[in-house]
Length: 382
Ligand code: ZN
Ligand code: ZN
Image (cartoon, rainbow, N blue to C red; front, side):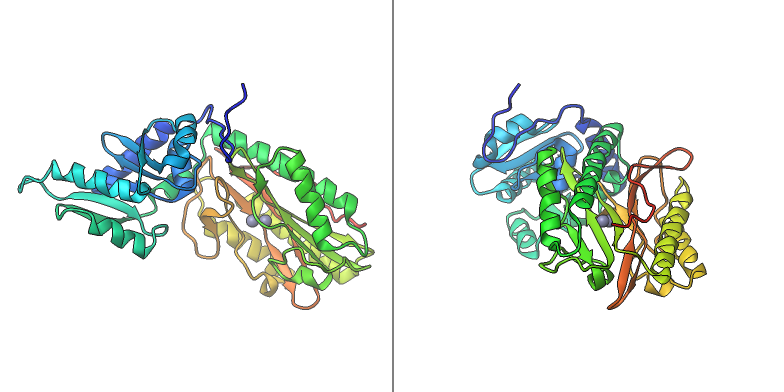
């Protein structure tokens, strides 16, 4: 059945178990001695109750969940929100949250009752918004900086999320075939990106998960070389790093191809990155730290004397956001668990000369990992 639309696409959230997610958060609230959590980061709100609007706040207490938004989102909230009461505020979501907290904590204003402790997401709430909220609260309601509880929960994906991520990865991988069809000497990087982005929309993607990277020739040495007006040269690497958002979940992959015939040095560099990427993929399993995955990639590149050109971390979590926890970098101690979805993307960048990166998405399984990205990794020469 067609869903009503109001500017934004309203989809409902079939199959997502928001109540189970809220229950996990409630347990975390107790462990952190919080009476409530004020969730203001839109992806965290989407994760916990399905609301995808841009103006909202979710208050989670031990007894209930309330989604605060404004009149623009009445229809959308009714269609999307699961497991939370909807409150439409006239002065905006945070003002409504303040009013609710004030009213609610006043009920507990007996002197012997300890103050009501409401956690806020310090990484996502501006100082001004925090001050406005605090100014409206009675003395028996205290704001506390909460740790990243929702981000922590989001690291381990449930079955429905993995299903959506698989679909996003496959749609994203399809764009690479489009890139291969259009890359040739003289074509502008932005034209390649435009073709890929058009194909993404045609395949049903809601958006790209980040600005498409097409970096050719010496620009391939820029790890984040967004597609520019430069033309692909007659000879050299082209790094393509791209992803789509499909039913809210992001994909992310990189392939590096060669236009013309590579030199033996370029071929060796490509093979070294391919080996390092495989070494890191092979290291992914439950119980090891993400730092060890990073170390596996670095060790492999060190064997090929290229490690000094590997200037970023090995990967990152992916889900509702393109970059989310955990960061797969040197010295990071987060331990992998089944259900985590991360990228594995070592690269080498020789400034002014060339760069190579290969990136897959993998899901941690009970025994190791499954590579989700289906695309071949042998060097493609065009
Ligand atoms: Zn990427
Ligand atoms: Zn990435």
